[in-house]
Length: 145
Image (tube, rainbow, N blue to C red):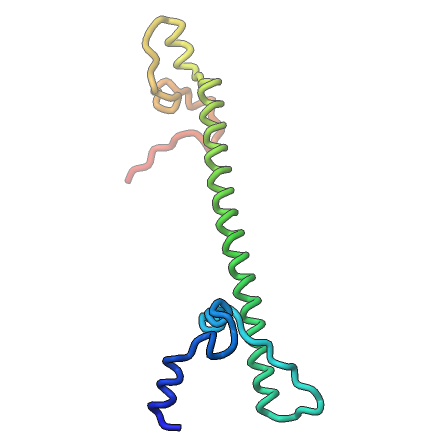
């Protein structure tokens, strides 16, 4: 058979010429399915048949692995979505709790009681801290740099 005849045969190859439906032909050509080759028996010790069976087994394994990979990817996407939803829910609950129970400090309470505007200074910003009441590791020390 000459090369031009082989090319012409391949160009005209379709499901009908192989006695199969066009859908089945497309599945085979796209690699979505493969023919089921007979498993080697003790009587068939031909290396060609054994190699062909090994190729078929490898294809089956790869197909199974591909399906499992798709499942893992889908579950990972679902987990990511669930984690984002959970994070948003926690943020909403924290925000709701902060709005329901505002934080009050001594300065805010004292200023509100005296009628002055509340300041955002914390106790650490104040100069009136009595250092003698702090335990030794927390007492401020002066360092000459």
